[in-house]
Image (cartoon, rainbow, N blue to C red; front, side, top):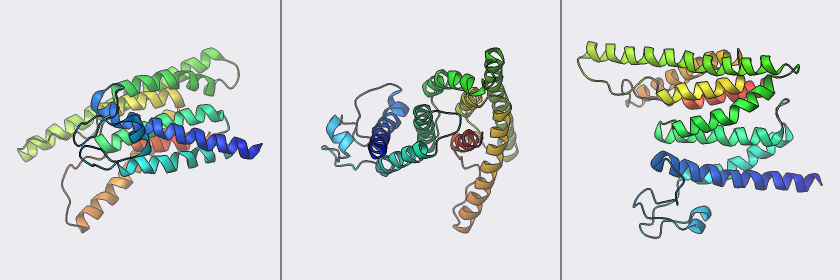
Length: 256
């Protein structure tokens, strides 16, 4: 019986990987659910060809490596979460969160973009989960308040950092006498912090933001050192911030 359950978990992870890949391909470009198209020639792709990973029939463009990576990694993660689930989250809910957070991270890494539609979907998803998570003693009023405070705090803190980033960019543009178009942090990161605040509540969202700042700082330092060694360093090169928020949030989910 346990082997059959494991098989169902892996199969479910595989199906989720197909959904993640599809949404990551169409949402950043079209902002809605449409038939998948080739990113090179914009030719609509047959559903069977798309989900089987075939080349575009018109231009021969290959499917992204990310597509195959998600197909392999997602079922493995599903099996790991099934064997070692978070203590306070049922397996199905944990899998839904995995799919959502993975989608956000993939889109941000590929497009440096966190969509408002995904943030809205995340708020709808994470609000009830956050309330159930923090309702340890049957006090629904306290649980709802803690969840809402977490969402407001996550949004508010990141919004403050976002405004500081805009100010810093303007200052550097003035000092260098040239326009710097890259932002230190996008507004999508602000909305994502609000969503994660609904999920984690207060004060976990504060821990999440502090951990994110530290992790992103370490990565940025290593990135700059590598680029300097390769003699390819460019000032103000943007780095997606969303994946760091998600990594720390995942650690907090498992450590709670």
